Amino acid sequence: SEKVLQIMMQYIQTHYSMPVTLADIAGVGNISKNTALRYFRENIRTTPVEYLTQYRVRIACRMLRETSEKIAYIAGCVGYDNISYFNRIFKKYVGKTPMQYRFERETENFI
Image 1 (cartoon, rainbow, N blue to C red):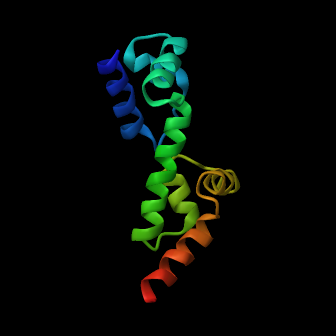
Image 2: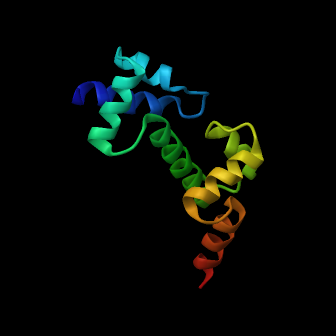
């Protein structure tokens, strides 16, 4: 089960920029959706889709810090074609909008 979990996590980390479903994730592990859910819950205390979302937000944070790309471009890079949905998800996980996050990171660098 640990090897299958690794395969599924690796799939997420490789395909996060594309639409990814629970069925896709379970499919690479060659297991059912319910089994995939159980493996994730038991081992990393989250769901596969939640893990995907957290991973996407982590990558977006890095891009906001390290590039000057437009937020809509970054949203697309991490798998969101709807900017307002991306903003909502980002704020839910980070506690601020992508714009606020970038601005605070930039001002930190000048202090």
